[in-house]
Amino acid sequence: SQGLPRLLPTPKHVRRRRGELRLPKAIPLFLPAPTANPSAGSDPNLERSVLLAAQDLKQQWSVACGTQIAIERPATLPRGGPAIVCRIDRSAALAPKASTARDAYRLVVGPRGIELSAPT
Image 1 (cartoon, rainbow, N blue to C red):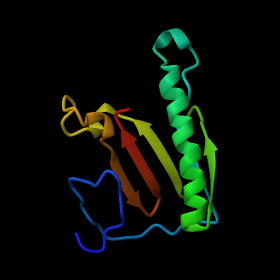
Image 2 (cartoon, helix red, strand yellow; image 1 turned 30 degrees about the vertical axis):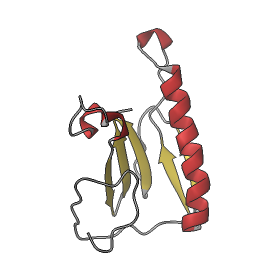
Image 3 (cartoon, rainbow, N blue to C red; image 1 turned 180 degrees about the vertical axis):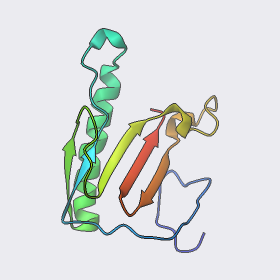
């Protein structure tokens, strides 16, 4: 669609709605909380890759948007101003068994912030 920001991978579906997100000078980035019990199925590679991706986003965001990101991993999400919330959610892949499912994501931007969900 015309006027869409550059997103990679390119979205298969885009739904525009009314409203806008006004970015504050600093915005928190909430990552999934690390699992307290490693035997409960925590994947150390996933934990590391999520943190590395967040650090990369923080750096690129600062250059592109001129605002700062504070990376946080709270046990529960605090309420308040705009935030970026990242979730591991297998339903973010429209075709979970497809070879491209690991690259799938769902991005929702609204007045309260940004929610990014991905299966991995």
